[in-house]
Length: 225
Image 1 (tube, rainbow, N blue to C red):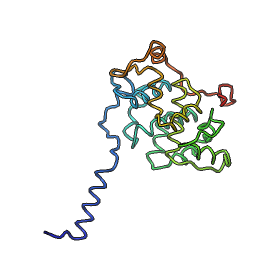
Image 2: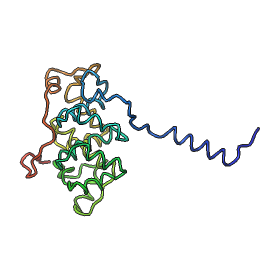
Image 3: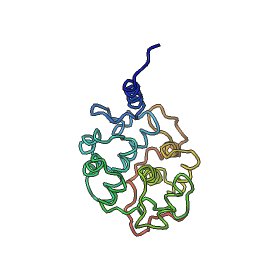
Image 4: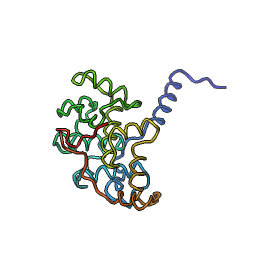
């Protein structure tokens, strides 16, 4: 049997790692499902479609910047959330992310406090966000959250609004193994093509268009846990 030299083994290892890495968004990838319900085929696509619709960005504004996001499914909700919170266009947030900045740095750069991630979560929601909530409660000004915590909490805020649930309840559902996209699709009756239709009440929710996460920074629309 032929022996592989150390250099060859290293090359094979690198190739395997590259093959296993998540595939980033390609310039030619189709994002029709974000703007056209007829193109939605699963809960994750439906969640993103609802988020885009509720924030009200035109396709001509949003679509050109999408290929610059490494992972659209994880990053796009944060882009929409931050753009709305700081009053900047989505392209500005995408530019910062494309430079390799963490979401924590970007939150600080656009002067959006972490408080906005925990609206409606006044008690410890337990895993997977209990630790982040605890760190935030102890040191709201100095805490630094991870990308995954920020992405997940943004989904909780957007999903709670879309599903007409309290953010605390949505965070708890996530801890019980029910992804945000699943809960939103289920509560709204999965109105997309190929989705399981719910009862009349759920289908009515599916047709309802929300107006995005609230902008009340004084707590008037905040939910009590």
